[in-house]
Image: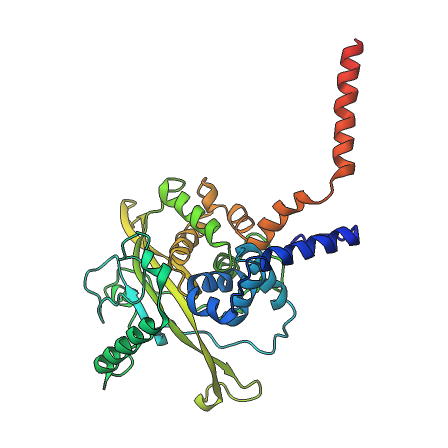
Length: 369
């Protein structure tokens, strides 16, 4: 139900568009798409996640065209995505094969393979860096060369590391359930309207492309008390995963028929949620469930919030709104939400005048009595 503006009053609309162009150009500066791509990675990742289109360059272009408006950039990307042909589906991505850049666990101090802090603002001082006002490109280039030289010395002779999942070691101890693989074709919400009750694949797809602020807010609501789901982050990992497609007419059991077409950066989160269950003696005992979150780029807060909501939506019997799949899934979509709110700017002359006339009639009738 994405709303778009209707046309009416061509001259006025053209004048409005010209004014928009003026507002963009009047400062006399032009920001290149390459500059956005190079310096605003978090913004690019967020746009890709909410538009469910992994295309960093196009996301940077959308940000430029939208003047930095997140919802407009996502709208542009979604609209572009709808024009693209769907030539094939990739094979299931195995995140164990991720080339990991960052990997931490809040559940264990020591994890197999060790903690890998990677690039994050988590450990920085939240103070304005006024040195950025007078950056020097030559100094930046020198710093980059020195840093790359240090990296090459550290990484010389090292092989790429592929880290095991933390939860796998807990499963080996029998602390987490092991489930059979679900080989059903995932529900695709971009090709079918979501219906309730929704399969988990539809829930996850809706959550991963949901508006970052909305997903975070509802995850926080659950954490704060609306359901009181308080997980411990078992593992956050950020890295690049390889994408393969299979030959449509060949035997997929043969490795040579799997074709590597590229990689994409993702953030993956597995949260451990304590729950009470009844044992065979009908006594309460504690066990853990897993909440799962994954999204394009480095988008950790959203992925963690998604993992909270994933676990919530698996328990629809709870009375809290964060466990109501219809409430959650229908209110976190960026284009749907902003479109429905923005449509209030469109003409509502007839309906409002009708209401106004009703009020006047009631008041006039009351006055005459």
